[in-house]
Image (cartoon, rainbow, N blue to C red; front, top):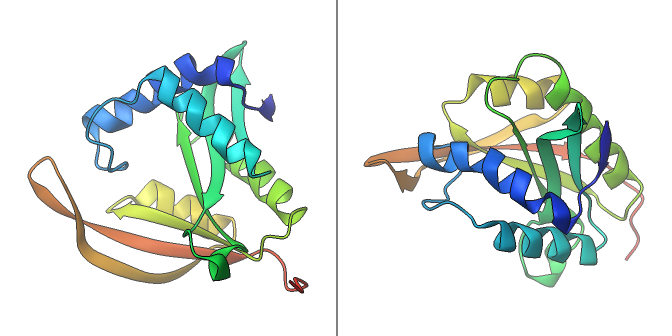
Length: 167
């Protein structure tokens, strides 16, 4: 089941996200993010009329995906950065693809022209997911992040969503 996230989902999202913060370079967060901060982030994204979604299995949140403004300057208003995280261990079952397709469908209903995804490299599973969904590779920033005493490259993938924006 895929639905809009609410601040009440923040505890579950924080627990799911904590694995990626502590164990991987997939996110550049260095410290666990408290549920209160996750709730604030959900609210701030949704106040911009952008989607923050969760997917559930047996009543438990097992993934989340959201869109956020790409950059703060006005000319970027029609571009969003998209992110997705699944509970560790459930990848490869189609859950991420379904969640991401729903996120992209909702974005296509908005005045959003381009979805961008930034992927810490290497991450073959994320690259494969993005490319399966039609994202194309746009380039790599090398050694742009540092976590766990290593430099991390970030690949950029993009997906045009609309060509009809007039303002």
